[in-house]
Length: 256
Image 1 (cartoon, rainbow, N blue to C red):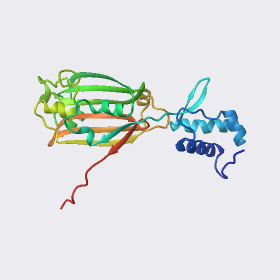
Image 2: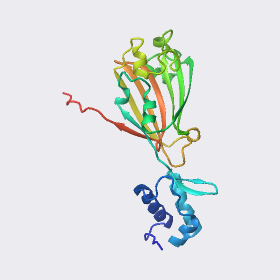
Image 3: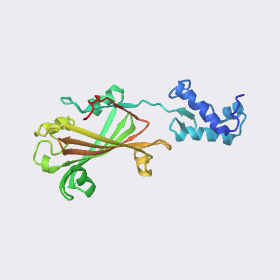
Image 4: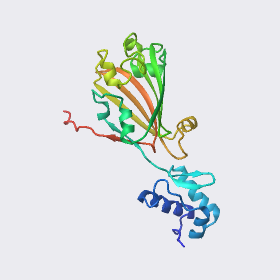
């Protein structure tokens, strides 16, 4: 029989023990957890306490339940997003495809583009006037059937209208990323900025991306610039348990 930590609720002790087993790999991805009956016997606690311990780990996204079968360790095969190398020129295809291939995951994408007028927020981010014409593309990605990201991207039609890249998901350059696409019309991207906001998802976001309770959302506000002129902006949403962000950057000389 296992013992509880004095002064600590029993369910917290049990959850901590199981969490550590998962982190060490003693309970591997896909492994079945002890049943509530096992926990009540091994820890000498009530069924309510056992359920509380399991519920705690579920809210952290570490485990999931299958009706009639039990509770299992979540398989965390994360995609890795490495910057700034993912934005380098001359890539034969879009970077997200390479990221999925590296993670050995099957990627599914849906995308839809409309032409509309810039709202005040979008206009401010693009450096244009509210009401100016923009393209708005909505993306949704699944990897091995699980939602991994959704996003919206906006481009000023002042730059792209009538060109081969007017419709980001159509035409001869639809397979290219933002940097290489814009070079086809003589617009050279010189910088990409990303602002990361870590927050809890809104109910609609959690439903759309199938985010379990307790798992945060990573919101990336992205801007591609040619010198100081924005070429494209995007707002990208990632469930925090499905992506790993890696940033490798040169260390600049001290600014005098």
